Image: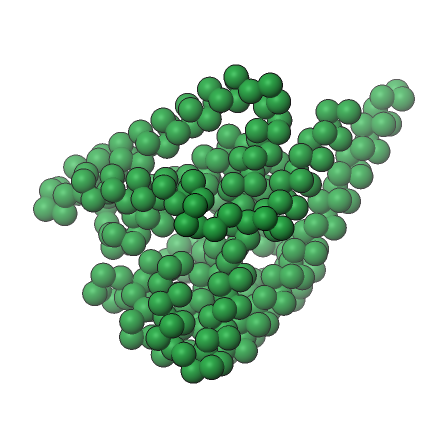
Length: 316
């Protein structure tokens, strides 16, 4: 009975996240992201030593997040139905607006409205976009959509199913803090390294398991080839795994150098095929649909098998 209630809560949270998504203008996480950004602006001191920045970075993300988690735990202990409160947490953590923004950017590029496309792209990426061409906009949008969908949707679900709503909330808050800080700081700053390192550790196994499972339903041989030749040399290994999955199945080149706060950072290109075009954004959305269908069927199959196993154990 408890397992069925958990499945119902999970299904309702997913349905609401897709049917009734909250806009960023009144989403509570927008306030959290602004808080993280304000903390970085007040605490970060670029002229101080790297050790000082490293230590202050640890305190700057851990104290606000631990405070929010303590409040969430307190509410769950006082709630009459803590399971449904956990479902509400999952609903708030799931980002289902990324595909809508990507479709809008694709339409703008086809209409030749590059300035508007850059402005919309700037709301979801930390890199500078003012000088990007239509190819650059398409590549940056695919990079961001791929990594944001995997992290802010699928990995949130993985943490929720494995460790519960508090784990999913913790991971989501770390992602929000990372995005807020990257819009203010360079990616190689000592201040942001503790946060980036913690996220890399938390994502290491879930990212690899998810990419491998998804690759079996897609172009497995090509994905394996890309993982072998690109992923382990990418500047951020987890991001490299994600981009390998999408570059191999979209047959395009992803990654490459980026501008952050006026400084050019060299990043490996994933793939040796053509550069992305606006039409590839539509192909990306179709690929995400395939991943969504396959992952949904996999979840249903896993749940059915778990019920069968539980039934056999109860008979014994």
